[in-house]
Image 1 (cartoon, rainbow, N blue to C red):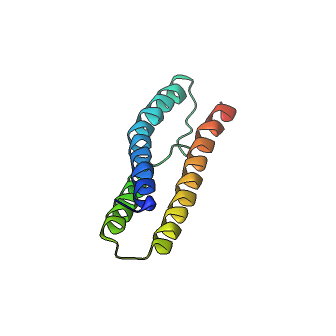
Image 2 (image 1 turned 60 degrees about the horizontal axis):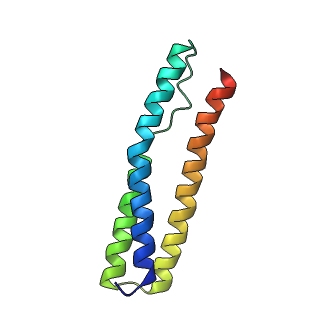
Image 3 (image 1 turned 90 degrees about the vertical axis):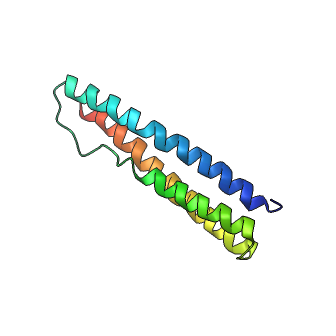
Length: 104
């Protein structure tokens, strides 16, 4: 594991696994909160499958980095694109949870 992108993909993959395991718990607690106060807002709940897509992309990036098939520049671009997409999806998820507070 000589390439630095391997470590970045591993770190991002581990954080994505943590987020994927934590997100359904938060969505369940918000569902209980919304149902307790009588509001039927269901559109704001995130889809908890999307962090697993990030985990798969990071696993593929790690394997490609270990094999050394593409150049390091290609892997860096894949890493940056994955970071932007995951940060955008996480921001939208947090925004969906915050909207629930304002709608109640």
